[in-house]
Length: 91
Image 1: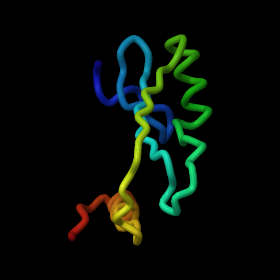
Image 2: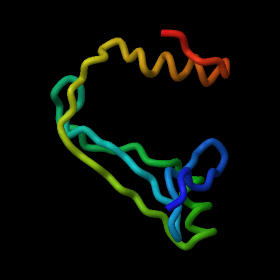
Image 3: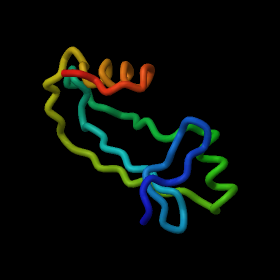
């Protein structure tokens, strides 16, 4: 498998081995304890392009219990700041 996989617009697949692969980690419950019933995958357009180009896509989904210990979601803020500026985030 080669990593990362192909990119379509802003969406990229995590790996490639005969077809593009999307890896997801999914919690059984959200931060409020409610059962989590949906998974966010690569966007529709990227998936359609990959299927047209390679004949299919694969998804590896790992599910389990999660410990939510970042209520401020600082990981998201840091990543967005780095993405918008291109500069490393100082902790």
